[in-house]
Amino acid sequence: IPYRAGEHENDPSRLAKRLRGVMDAEAARLGLAGALPRLYMENGRYVTGPFGWLVARCHVVKRAFGQRYCGLDACMSNLMRPGMYGAYHHISVAGKPTPEDADDPAAEPLNVVGTLCENNDWFAKQRPLPASAGVGDLFVVHDSGAHSHSMGFQYNGKLRAPELLLRRRAGPGAPAVVQRVRERETIASLFAETSIPADLGAPLRLDTPAAATRAEARDGEAPTRKMFVWAALAAAGAAAAVATALAMTRARQTA
Image 1 (spheres, rainbow, N blue to C red):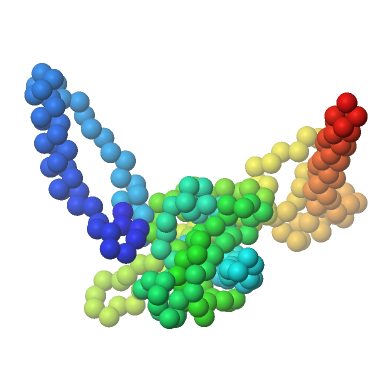
Image 2 (cartoon, one colour):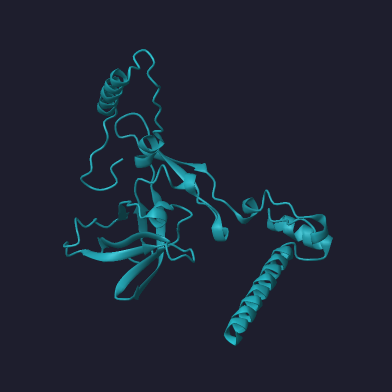
């Protein structure tokens, strides 16, 4: 699909004709007449890619190393392609004209980054964007229909965003309709398929505040305390690992 301005959309009919010509020529050369292999193509990106947008709000702006960074409330867990292998996605800022290029006087090279504690959590590096973009603005990452939610993950407890469907009603002048087709993930849904061994305590009750209150009254403890226990165990393991690493370092220095 055309990710950049000026790129052309693929023509399936033209592509099919070219493939047919190549296959027929190769079949004749190899003597495969009457026994042509079947060619299958996965066209998910062509069907869904141009029709999805990741919309995120800028929550923080900072200047460092002579550059300006716009931090969004989205991250690689919402769209991993730019950070994973440097894929380009067009970005616009809602309500602000998109600069034509870096020479546009209204443009400023911006770094658009996410919320993960990973140094490759980027949506764009030094991209010409409106110089007036800042906290509170909505950033729209285009052509993400094929690889946004489908490649999403929950690293660092990131909850996946809801999905909205924009539908255009039939008839001239009919208003568009927005419908929610996937709910926003919650902490309860994050732990919905988690099973806690009986010897580690009572099951977590994260569905509703009322349920949490009932569980606390029944069990005599805060139902979310088990999560702090897990954190404590993890911290203890990390402390042990650090102590081991320090001991190994001292041993090497002594040797």
